[in-house]
Image 1 (cartoon, rainbow, N blue to C red):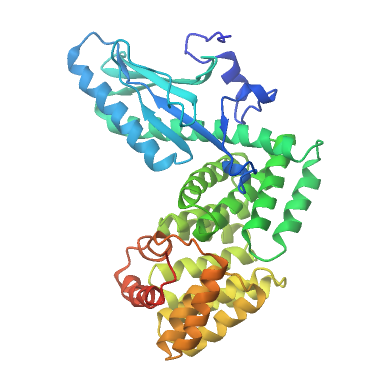
Image 2 (tube, rainbow, N blue to C red; image 1 turned 180 degrees about the horizontal axis):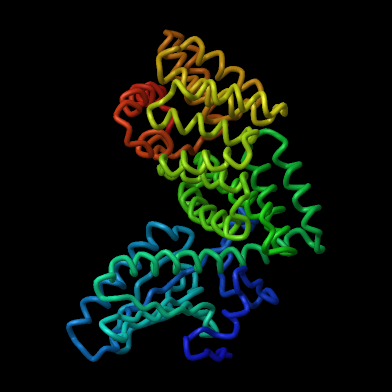
Length: 451
């Protein structure tokens, strides 16, 4: 049944969401199609649903045909923005013609989950007004609606804000759905503290896909009991970042989708707790993985200003510095991280970061020793295996390099070739860094590590 909306176009359901997000009351509430592989539950619970989003053409309600181009351009920009920033969804653009289908995907694809539509109108005193809505495709209930009004000369700035908010609202709807699904998968209702404890226990082991996915499921279960739990939102975003940084764990599209979902989850966490140092650090990790290296550096600096003893912020800030062409800063940062973090789990990561930076500046023997220390703690650490291949090859130890490449292929037989470009080349615009990394990637490719 369609909910009533007030004069602003916002439904009573949407109002109840306030700053947090709404949990569906029962499994039938969420318009999803669940993906399955050979009848088994997908590994990554945050991306277990396949949801189609149909973008309807923005309607021109001004009565002025000159505004039609504005409405059409906005629709195109919205579709383009969602293709770049909402990669967890199957996106389609409807054609506004009589008799045209508005039902979304065909039988072979996911059925429509959400419909995005809106209109443009003249406002008062030379302003323009845009009304946007997200509807449940099955019930046509308004899940979110908002009215924007800007001076005509601020159209472009206003458009950016609207596109960003629509993307965020779609991700929040997806997150609501995945929270409910995770709660069902763990059975009885668990207290958030118990869920967070189980997630932390999973993450105490080696950095592996299965353990990270298990932690992710528990973070979602914690959010089922408390949707505003900042620790759970931050933990969920961190598991998304781990997936992004290990693209051989899953199909590349999962990494792209995890990047988008993690970005929105951490933004929600920071809206609840702006002073949460760990959340700023995770935001920096996601920025860095997405190639926003200066933003990442700012987020790490902010995290350390709030908690100077936050080991993970020191470690990732050092790695980010290497990507910016300042590899000399990495090893001192790693030393600080290891002194502050006496636990051994992250030491595998710290040793890899140090070895990576040393290899960039040509200290090959030192890098080999650090990579080997990393792999002693986590033999399946893909990044350490890859760059150990390059380091061994540069030192003339080709037979060892070949054996290391074989170990990587044994762990990750379907490693996507785009992993190198995504993780270590295209994310940095630093000419110095790119000159350092390119020959290393060539060495890795020489051993046919990527498929």
